[in-house]
Amino acid sequence: MKKIAIILSIFAATTMILSSCAKYEEGPSFTLLTKKARIVGTWTLTEVTINGTVEDLEGMIIKSTLEKDGTGSMAMTWAGFTFTSDLEWEFDEEKEHLRTRTKDVDETEFGDWEEGEIIRLTNSEFWVRTIETENSVTVTTITKMTKE
Image (cartoon, rainbow, N blue to C red; front, side, top):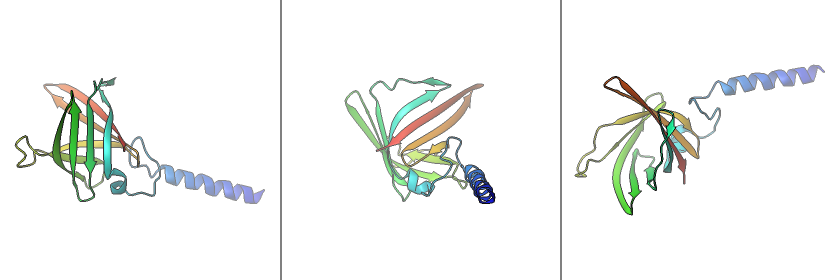
């Protein structure tokens, strides 16, 4: 009986420690892959929620490819046309936010950094929340992507 109590105590302590390791609001609570290893790859936009309402993407396909060196590309296909752009990406110091910027229309230099709070980052799912306030109106957007 004493052995069972010890095993249960160790299991309970391990569970509490691992559950407190969650970096992101929606998980995962534990992973052996680094954040960089999870984020590198090609991601397809699957859902956009604005102020709690899921938006209809109406046949729009957006894919972003993130490379290990902080570069990548984005392609948007809609109505039979595909637009592509180079991009740069980086984590903030705590790896809680992702910053991206794409090349301007003239393709000569990158635009301003845009930042989103990472709320889920697994090897197959990536969710980002942005909150913007303009003219006293706050817009919260949650973007969900899946890895190819």
